[in-house]
Amino acid sequence: MRNPKQPRLSSRIFLQGVLLRNPVLVQVIGLCPAVAAAADLYVSVLLSVLVTGLLIVCECVASLLLKKVPRRVRVAIYFLIGLVVCAETAFFLEQNMPELRERAGVYLSLMAASSVVALRCEKCAVKQKLHVSFLDALANGIGTSLVLLVSGLIRGLLGSGTIGDLQLLSTPPLRGLSMPFGGFIVLGFMAAFLKWFSSVFLEQEAQMAFGIRRERRKKPVAVESVPAPADTAREPGETQTPQSDAPQTAAPAEEPAQTVPQDTAESAAEDDAAENPAEAFYEQASDDPDAELTDDLFATLDFSVEDELNAILESIEGLNPTEGGTHTDA
Amino acid sequence: MHSVFSLLQTALYMIFVQNLVFSGGYGASEAIRMSAKPKRFVPFALMITFYSTVTALLCRELDTIPEINALGSAAHILIFGGVLALLYGVTAALLYVLLRPGRKFFNLLGISALNTMVFAVPLINRQAGFTLLQSVGTGLGSGLSFILALLLVNIGLRRLEKNPDIPPLFRGTPAMFLYVAMLSLAFAGLSGRALFA
Image 1 (cartoon, chains in turn blue, cyan):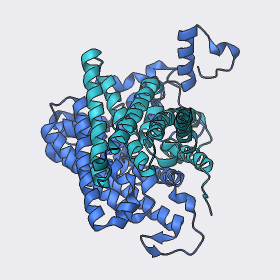
Image 2 (cartoon, rainbow over the protein chains, first blue to last red):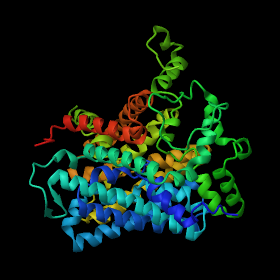
Image 3 (tube, chains in turn purple, brown):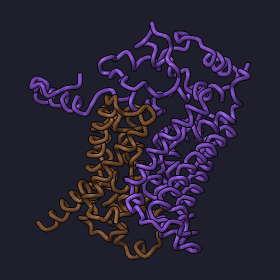
Image 4 (cartoon, rainbow over the protein chains, first blue to last red):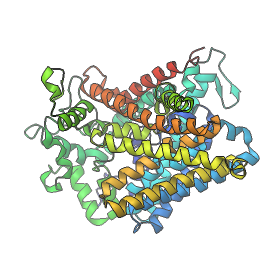
């Protein structure tokens, strides 16, 4: 039975795709057009339409036809579908809107290899029915589009004083904002804003979406303590224990559900999981170790590059670079 | 000798001056996500270098055919993308037959072959009108610049993770974006373009 406090599946898909698990700001995918091309509102609109259309086409095809195809073949099929869509779009623009085609540059072509498409198809479409895949594509398309449009608006306004072709500001333009580093800065502030917005206005939904995972992740390091809130933010001064120091922290994501404290959100999720495979998927999606959340990207840091290089040196030459005291990571 | 210098010069230019990840945002998602998984650095870096170099070489050779060179950009998207997809298909089939690697290996192979950075290389070469050796240099340099990006982002992520002074709202992805922005700004400075005129 579905928990009455929990939103409907379609609402949850949209909430996750647009806000809580926004592809660009939370999952860190589809950055190339967001940082480089979305410096102009017209290009942003073009890429938004393209990425949403591409997501819908690819996810529907994957959901209908590619479930039995091996993954190594599927990723090439997504790319080929993307190529056809992008080439068609480029051809149409060359004939009808050559100026916009010029502005979009190579980034229009690169949408064929967009990581948003491949990742959503693999995470959702090949595991779900058509209608769920369609909703997922639409939600993630809207989520990506929102980032592209807001970024295009801000960078266009501050970078050149214009919105589209309309001159609005007469102050000296910050031309740097039109460059990729400007895109990263705008994305950084947008990600912080989304974090604040989610924690203030969507606290309950965020808990529903991520509660299980947080409990599981936190359990081995604080078994005796009171379970921490599901919010992704840590307290100031609190640092995460490096996993090389505490290897047991990597295991909990794989642990069976019955070992986890049974709070309300989780019980509701398990009830739904038993009844509806799509509901179950959207619960599992937040428990996927490859689905990088804000802090989860950091949680996957098993060891540093220095450790890796030291291990290689040791294995090749029998050297121990840590002896000189220069090595600081455990 | 001149041709070797031309190749090396282009490669170095791509690594340090026009680093595709920081100066163009190409493959930025893969660089950031992969930088959190140093265990996969070496195979991923080798694969991406291989694909960017060989794709650049093949596409440049194809573009010397007058009939193909005369085609518009839409056709070039299809041709260059087709070459990349074919290259991925051939290498994946060969590896499957010869080495029988596991599923994880193929996942990595797919990400390294079919991403915005590898696909951008032949398109940039065509736009810039590079010669064959310069194209190979671009491919090689792009792969190596990706390794540099992985290292720099990984080191940054480690330090950000340990820094207690970051406000809670900016912890995680926002801080990481701002850190990558600083790296991108540094590379933009190397390019010699006016940033705030």
